Length: 442
Image (cartoon, helix red, strand yellow):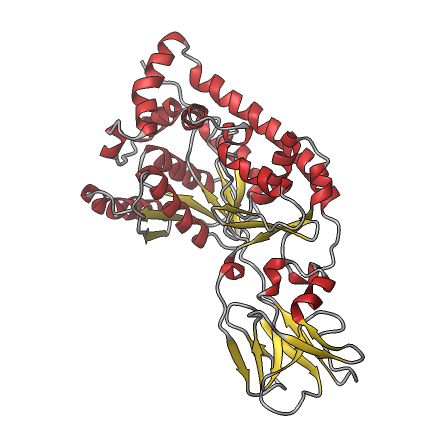
């Protein structure tokens, strides 16, 4: 009896039609069943539809010897279909979870390969979505995690799309058989030490005996969770708008929020707003680690609380919470000589400074606060630098990074602080550009 032909091309085209103006469609091609079907479908569609140029990318993890033959297989398939192939070799970092480390390496390669106005297409399907939901449920994930895999998200300079999330693995197998396709069977898929393999081969067959539609209904639940997460994101944006007021130190170029509007929210809304704010910058903390936020929020006014997260640190100062990462967490040299003050001076790990106006004569250098500095001020005599910084309300984490202009051993100016950053006669001013943080995590 002939198997019914599955109209996958039409369904795929419906999913991808909003993206037909992309510069390139790049297919994540492992050589397995799912990505082989996706690649074949796209090539077939390109013969009758006007589509962006197709390219494929194969990531070689080097985790098993049998995988050394897979790039050659992928090249053979792509050559037969007339699709250019890029093979990327990656190093998988050792760690407790090989699955997670391999995924991070793979998506790191995808991130680097996806250029502006390009789309990366991956072949995860409905059964994968159901597995993801169940896997995350067993790990105690919240609404964001139970949304499972999004249909689309930003990636590199372009976007990642998953156009087969409404297609079952059985439908892909039928299509592959009908088209006479060949694909790679990864032997590691039979290793039940990996959580997803155990779910796929031991748990889901048992579920399907009692509930044949389990993958479909679980994937539907993930879609409901995704919708709920969208509503939570809307609420977070409303709450964050109240905390995004301007501050006296916006010139630092740091991400910050006013603390008082956050404190006015319920604890659940605080966590929701902060999760939305932190998501582009760091891996989000687990439930137990959120106690770090409680400690930072409730610390006494003269404390200097810090909440350390995977991608950086959250500090509290001058009524705001501040995100610090990248060079803001690196140590600085003690002194940098300024041989030509007519030219901007690059400060290792700390941006750059310029002298706007006629520079003072004599040997100049830029130093950082060590403690005990004294500065001469017109009409005020000599003043302790610590007291001057207190008067200006300078956040504690900034004080050790403020460029101090010295002429020999005399402190002349403190960058960017009105009344301290310029010569009294206005002949010059010390201007510091701290440099931006790398906020490209996700």
